[in-house]
Image (tube, rainbow, N blue to C red; front, side, top):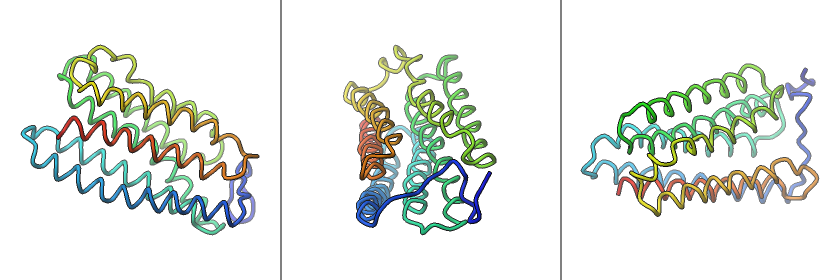
Length: 220
């Protein structure tokens, strides 16, 4: 069910100007860091001795820039039918970002059954999530949050193979990023808290920086 401007009936948007300004600053910082970071990591990967890193890095940077770009567009766009279309792509891009992040780490592992199965499972889950967000917007938002968390922590099933191939700093940064994403979900759902949206996006930005740094450690 939608209301006259195309807004899903289950979605509210009730932020004052100061809250929107604060959220806009977070997004401006995020997009700026994302563009610079994408250039840096692609250059580093291109100069790395491991040629196999480049495809996964490209996939990761596409996911990173999609998440940051669509989030900034959706959250700063004025209320209109276009805003709710952007919302679909914003939420879909999160799945692509998570799956793209996993792709870089799985690329560090040997192509054994565990790594291949994890890669397939991650991308299948992402495809399901994207499909729900694009075709059924606003209807399964709680399920979407659960899928985000399941997808984000699915790497725990391959803990030993991952620990064996990743630098210790990357592992700690990976865990820290996952913890920040998970903690941020509390603020994502705390609709009555002022600056709730900016705080949630702040958690996402810091978590994304942790995962970016973890990947950079692997390819540098």
